[in-house]
Image (cartoon, rainbow, N blue to C red; front, side, top):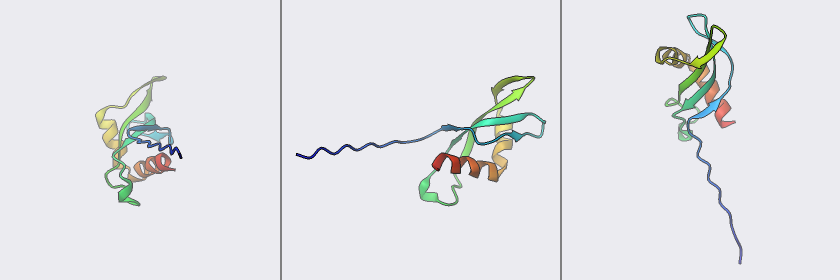
Length: 88
């Protein structure tokens, strides 16, 4: 009798520390959460987006606001870098 183990790992909303990104306000964002990755859409990943990030303000970390998340998602290169780090 042969026993076969199958492990399926589903990664969604994975927190990835990609890089630091300076927002228009001058604040620094990092520690990005990315979601919407569909590997069938390789190499475009057009549905992927940053859903959360951390921002340092006055020496303290906080969650990014919706407007800051929108600003991050406007940078397609940043979103794509997050996707690449998630997959590779």
